[in-house]
Amino acid sequence: MTAPRRTQAERRDATITRLLDATVECLATRGYAATTTSAVAAAAGVSQGALFRHFPTRQDLLVATAEVVAERNVAAFRGLAGDPSPDVEAVAAVLGHLRSVVLSPANQTWRELLVAARADPGLRLALLPAREGLQEQMLAAATDLWGNLLPPQDLPAVLSIVVNFLDGLAFSALDPDPSAPPGRTVERALELLAHLIVDRRPATEEIP
Image 1 (cartoon, one colour):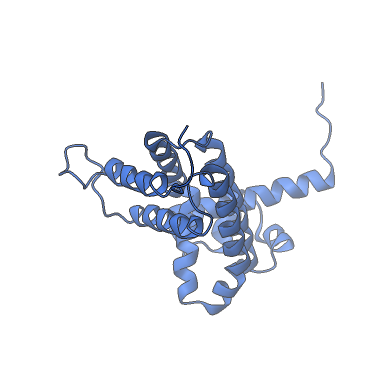
Image 2 (tube, rainbow, N blue to C red; image 1 turned 135 degrees about the vertical axis):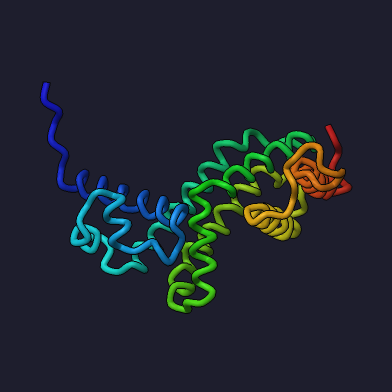
């Protein structure tokens, strides 16, 4: 049986998805400088002309990729996090899941773009909506998970501490070897962060 022909809109969407996925792959494996439109087009299996029909400039392509990666990261975090819990072990497990998202190849694209944006004012400005959108979505996810544990005024600050710590792990600081000295393992660091979250529970709240 012959498969039904895709509509023009479906073909367009499929091409855009391939281009965005190829950009993620190039940024993660080649780095920002080598993620050229020709490299992305080759990885996606399309012509540069097709690329430019959807993304008139390289910057347009990179910003669209950042937006998609932000959406995927938040979805991955929500999907892995599970139900909210006031237990330190459960919160540490959620932080471990978030760490896997932060260390993923997709999130590597964020690091590549943010580092590049430091020296490129145009890119920095263009990425601002995507960055603000990611922050809002992450705060909403954190509120769903830890809103019952943290005073509302503390939630943004604690989320900032968590995200910046996990981003730092990508470049690497702590030794993941279980035989490392106490206090130097990632697991212990995540446990301490979990205590920070759980121990900030408002004093007036009764513990079930």
